[in-house]
Amino acid sequence: MSRLALIVVIAAFAVLTAYAIYDVGFWGIISYHLPSSAGWQVMTDLVIVCVLAVLWMVADARRKGRNPWPFVLLTIPLGSFGPLLYLLTGELAAARTPAPR
Image 1 (cartoon, helix red, strand yellow):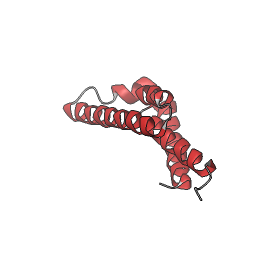
Image 2 (image 1 turned 180 degrees about the horizontal axis):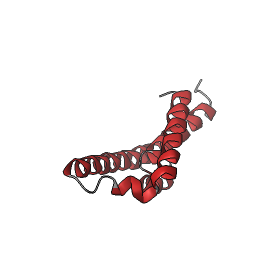
Image 3 (image 1 turned 180 degrees about the vertical axis):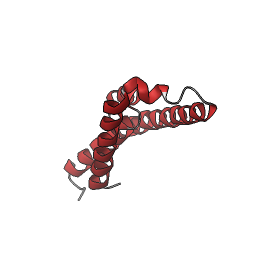
Image 4 (image 1 turned 45 degrees about the vertical axis):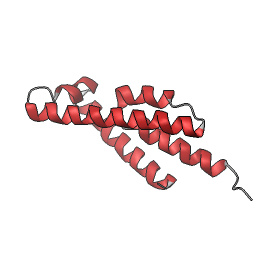
């Protein structure tokens, strides 16, 4: 994924997240899903995807010699921001690494 695409996705998602937190607060985002089984399904789906993303980040970081834990810790309260920032920092690090001759 290109750096520009990641930056655009992160920025747009950050604006949406900031608006949601301003509108209903952090707990409001979570509590919105609690009253119905449809909300439980969405929350469960998000938890499953975040767990899979964390497992992928840890395995990928081991292969690449990176530290995944700041991104894992970000994923717990902030969801997609952890994996998105992991991808972006990986892209930035790859851009700084000289190509083999």
